[in-house]
Amino acid sequence: MALERELATYQKVLKDLVAEGNNEGKFVLIHGDELSGVWGTYEDALQAGYDKFGLSPFLVKRIQWMETVQNITRDISLCQASSCR
Image (cartoon, rainbow, N blue to C red; front, side, top):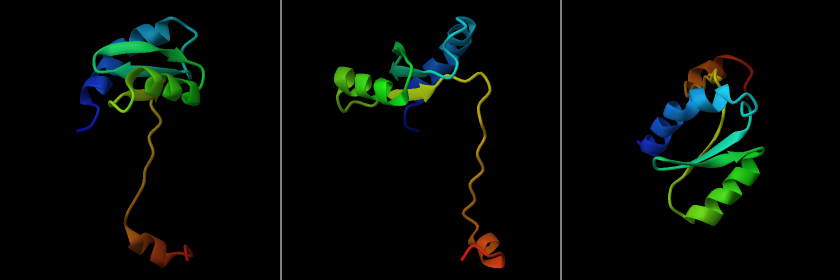
């Protein structure tokens, strides 16, 4: 799985990031086991990641205590049965 280390690092630091009080909703930049910082926008964090790590894998993720779950289906029969056309 891609970015396993980065996601594990995010889970380790999430409680501390949220406890700081002003980070929720901002974006964290993680490379390997390294927390590289917090930015106010996705674009700023992404740019910082490219500036610092180039094309090496890194993670930019919104800091959220409660993750939003999204359901996406690939069951085309659901769409064919309704007016998805």
